[in-house]
Length: 113
Image 1 (cartoon, rainbow, N blue to C red):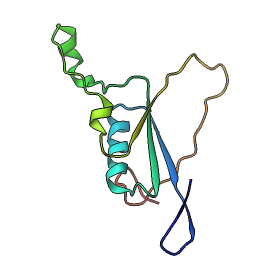
Image 2 (image 1 turned 90 degrees about the horizontal axis):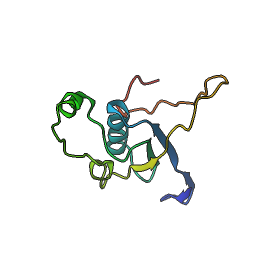
Image 3 (image 1 turned 90 degrees about the vertical axis):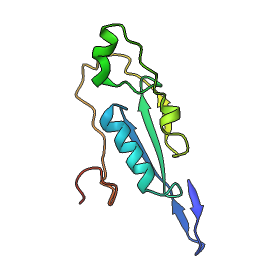
Image 4 (image 1 turned 60 degrees about the vertical axis):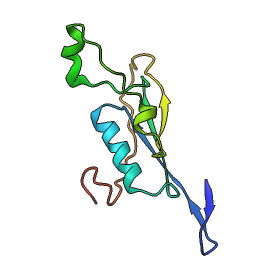
């Protein structure tokens, strides 16, 4: 996407995609959304389910206790984080796929370079 800035120069919006919305992915997306400007980034969270799974509470489910659903749509309301549902359709027999990763200064999500 191209946006103009106050000086009339083009501005490219960066796209950040977080794969997996477990504890680490959900926290990373939330921190990025709080610390970066929406004009500069578009954050997409990719997960197989629309609700956050509280793995530390699985023992409660095992004994029949109902847990309140925690929809990502509520968790990230007003943050600009978009959820995309996707799942792996099968196992690849080929080599593992890799993704290019860039460090974001000031996000608080890991080391800074």
